[in-house]
Image 1: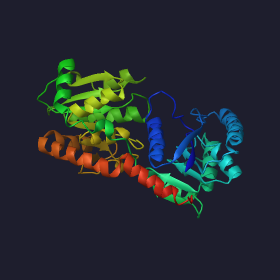
Image 2: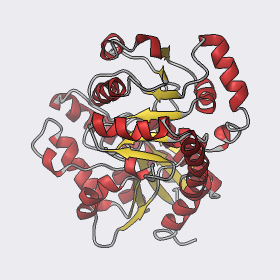
Image 3: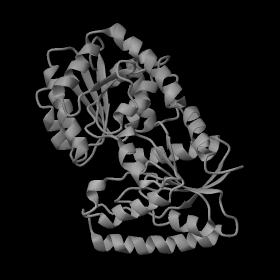
Length: 376
């Protein structure tokens, strides 16, 4: 099957690090592993984040012009279907619906978001555009259960809806258990942190909004665990760096700030540490939780956004109550005090990700969904 692929929020070809781009690339990879030919149809970015109505109108005009350009390219050899990844009110799809109407091909969306309460907000133009887009969709893949209740009413009666679990390529993490002792030795040599206490890991950008709020919960939880034995490594950087550091005042000797790191470097910390922690006020879906579990690391997350879709509570980790530092500290303490439980959960976490959130699982779900709207 020939598929035209488009990501209106962030082009997946950009070298800038982004969880959103990572998921987009993984989707393209999974579609290709399913035997499909996937071509990025456009790199036009429709995102407008400031609530500037004039700029949104201009982007609509530019998007429709881009649709005409794309249509001119595709009309001689039309794809079998169009696949748009991650559209929402701040980044609507001005291209796919026009192309699909003209070529009479199925329109497929994945990870679309729709918030009914935003119909009078600063992005009302994009809100109603997404409503129209979803009404035209032949198939929608939902990656988190949190979005399902709002998405389903927007789809036509003839449209298909398929749950696609968040997923990742597990290969970079499969050797983590085998290299654990070597990774710990290397990290100890570089940072001289105590070897006889559990090592915790957090990977998150230090940005305002939900990231900073999550750091606030983490700091409060760790202060409540101050009597226990642990050392935290934090990977990440951003404009709120100084403010984030200030949240952990009083815990300075128990935290190592690592700054931004490559995916390969982070994989070494997944291999070496004992528990992955992130209160996740609102993540969708929280790919680091999957990376950590695929490495054999038990996780503690907050039950916000799409995180419940990637943590099976009591299997590969724990889900704490959203925004609740007491709940988070309690879950973490359970793991800190029980090395055997950490080991057991780490082993179960690997199996959980392999079974539910691997590329193989995603490829099967995608092909099954696409078969509903396209006859070979």
